[in-house]
Length: 267
Image 1 (cartoon, rainbow, N blue to C red):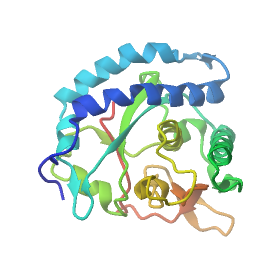
Image 2 (image 1 turned 45 degrees about the horizontal axis):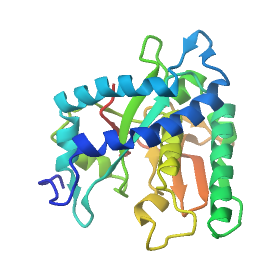
Image 3 (image 1 turned 120 degrees about the vertical axis):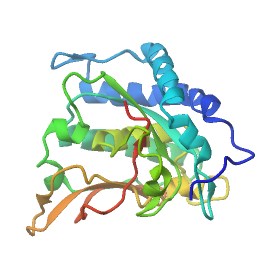
Image 4 (image 1 turned 45 degrees about the vertical axis):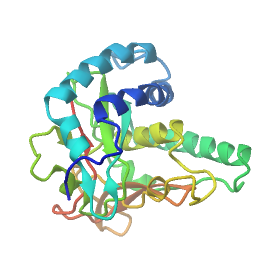
């Protein structure tokens, strides 16, 4: 339940700006792979070094719209304080082939890091329902809307909240900007966690937070329309991490009332 701020928590107004460098590195890698260049389809993305000025504007908005206040008050029974990861996603149409390419690159990065750190040398497993994701337009997978800002700053909770989790965080705070992440935002979040050493490389060890390795609840993209799978069953995208070596982009027959994670502090 939402409660009083924890006594050992760094205030969000300090903690989130400290994540900008890591979020910028993740953005640079995602943007370069999605576009191959800065100008794509008439959409010009900011250079990584330009994100500082854009973030300062967002930082002011989060102070005024209740985002930081919600984050600083968020706790869950049995888990204590809820921490958040900052990410910066390019706002650009991204089709399923590029989503797969992003996932394959991250899988390779995870594998190389495991080898370098003496972890298990098994390849990172990718479970992607390609026929499902191929049915969605590039705008849908990216959450792209013409006229929106060229990048999206967002915050997603790190804790394993279960299928009802993030609904508990925003209950009573519905006026705080929030939205269901796009598939591109979900993958960008993975990159930000990897860049910030929040994805483990050696299993569920004591020095790697379990809540970030085993993010198996993931994101139900229930804002996307249902599509038939190969058996004719209607499903939607469901993205999540499993263990320390599995990146999953699958489908699930999600009901409208099903809960999911949210991006807090939406633009």
